[in-house]
Image 1 (cartoon, rainbow, N blue to C red):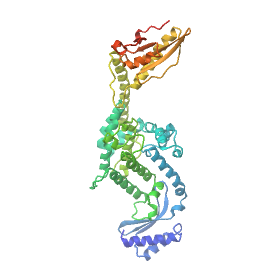
Image 2 (tube, rainbow, N blue to C red):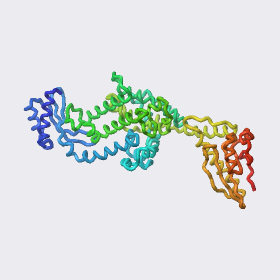
Image 3 (spheres, rainbow, N blue to C red):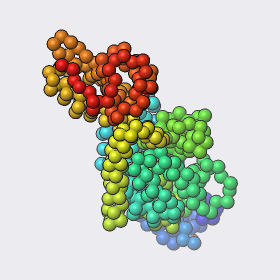
Image 4 (cartoon, rainbow, N blue to C red):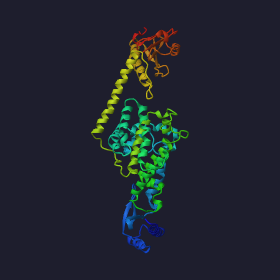
Length: 480
């Protein structure tokens, strides 16, 4: 639109708006006013613009098929807009404090299930500090980014993405790795993908942008395209209707992409010296190995959610994108991959049981990996052996069991006490014979019997100097 045309159209708008007549002015009055100002009107019509809320306007088409929108309502005459300003500010504040953004590719029912699990709602940021909110919000991620979400999006939606499709094989493999027990490896394989996705979205940018600059460029492109759709592709509309703060209230898509962009800039790409969130899901912590905080298992779900969010940004930032923002109906490929993931879970369970028994029987150590130090399985076995074997033996010989302890990670043991005929005994069960002498000596102070799983292995060395009974569980005879 030429400077002259723009000036005259603005003049028409200002005239009727200042007279408070935009709500009642007729199309003929607008046409006549334009003609008097030297503007050739090719077409003039009533229309509705906006996304979540439709606003009546007059659409004027001038030479070269250029258009202008003259809204019939002033912003603060729109009651819904006024009513939503504060709630949406509260929503924005909530997402900033929990260190995330609204999930995409899912309905509100799924998101509300996540809120239900965490016992949080938008507005609770007024009652809990940032650390408390983020700790409680951790369970939100595996709840909403569950298999029913990540599998169909990965298998059916992401392959259609211009910026993500080439990474889909790695994403699929990371999912299989996570559900096979390699949780940290799966997170490590996903984080480097993010920067390449941003580069792909800003494909024609020649500037040497830094990471935050790339985010800003992506979000700006998406915002421009959503805004264009919001105003029906018009070449001009009064500035107050397309201010960012106004658009965030009037258009849910703008609100979501801005929250995604804010999170990327202020959390994922934040300098480690300024990073103050509990999840550790930060590119620099990962890239520079300054801390192991990024290895948080819940960061797998964050990574999947972030990739989905970038697919959502692509929908609007790249006009040739073929991604649909709607959740796909699962097809045969999705069902097949779901079975593959379940097979990983089942085989992981079988492998763990077999491996644990082999290690115990052969006095072999557990090899710690980043995702698993083995303690949960050891604790579970100690508890089950105590309950299913020792307690039964004691009970069957008339002992009254009491003072059941929890498995102790330091030393890898569990204890129980039993009473009979005025006598009290205490039994300790070690995970294996080759436990350091210090633990044996410490248990000797309070226990009458020190037992261990598996066969003896250099017992005289490990239990050197211990006077109390030490031996394998299978060989123990309950005292009368």
